[in-house]
Image (cartoon, rainbow, N blue to C red):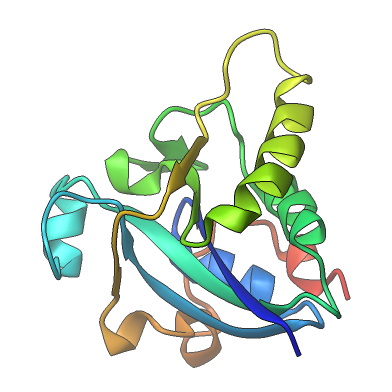
Length: 163
């Protein structure tokens, strides 16, 4: 197995985690707070505009699902033109972003990002940046929608059953 990790911010991380967990080749996910200015923020600090993005770390087996496939799925469930918002959720923590810890991933990320950008006449709001930091969210946020099946999610239910 060739396991890689990518960090995707796509609005509320509860739905994003459930969405990515459905795909064969995704071997693990963890929700957390990325690319903010302080260490180990709490959910309350993030909701009070700490500057962190609600993010899902996705560990995937490159032999079963490609980075490109993951990004194709990502662009299905985000609005890359929305500034600090996804669905009804507003604030800096709901910004969209693609963050990488392995610089070797950048060429593939850039290629897919640029393809998506071609669909729009102005620059996308989705960040494409190195991962500056990632702090796991509190345990009650992990697999939240599995623990709370009627919990809130901005991603339409039809996307939770693609496979």
